[in-house]
Image 1 (cartoon, rainbow, N blue to C red):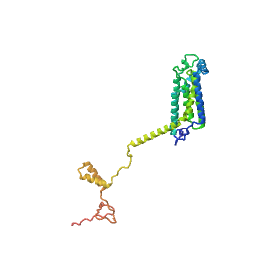
Image 2: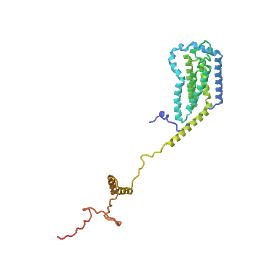
Image 3: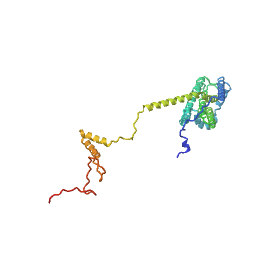
Image 4: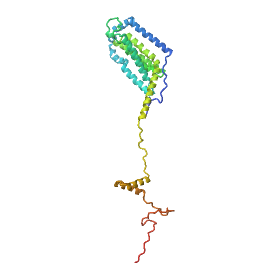
Length: 332
């Protein structure tokens, strides 16, 4: 018997009507404010301001030595910000949603966001070249343009984008609020964990939060491209299916009606085999079939009107109601 839990695993009968988010004035204002904050953090680190001093104070405080009992747990918790494991987990969930709702939009949105993340964050990382706390060479220095790749924090930005996609794709306002709170908590925890372990400066984490939020806010600009890509993929699939159906040979249905030989055709076949020099076994078998179909008909006791030229078989002696043939008189 089916239950409600298993019933929810079925595909929806029709694709749901999904309304993609638009770049409203509110969203544009948030995007502009976050971008200004992003540039301010970069400028503050470049000029070695008070933010760099705060970075050094937190690093020299060594949180992993102050609270060593948290180290074992946080080593596993920080995996929630790694690109590979989080992408696999979220793509499995979004893949099921794509199958159930007959749409590729969830997977395409995830792929677009990860592509933007790799391009933007990776370019800034390589361009600024900041060294991490474990590789710092001079106390109080910003450690910029030294061949590093930790500014902004990729773990933090990836946590914001990957878990924030779930809130972005939510279909109800209530689910969007809950998922936004969960993604904010996870990304905040991942960023602070990297500071606790000592792999990132505090300013790296702050810039990572801003970088991930910029990608989520900019996604509505890419919705038309995502819709065109989905339509193109479905068109290619339909053309492939049509070619496959056209190239498939038509097979006769099995178990269909078989041709039946009528008595006339059987008699004609027997006559043809008898006239020719066929095999004896085949001749005998065919002859039996012919005899079975050409046996003399027995007339009834009192025929109403027998056709002319028809001979009836005589009944056996001793039959009930049958007259015995007359015997010729002989002299005794």
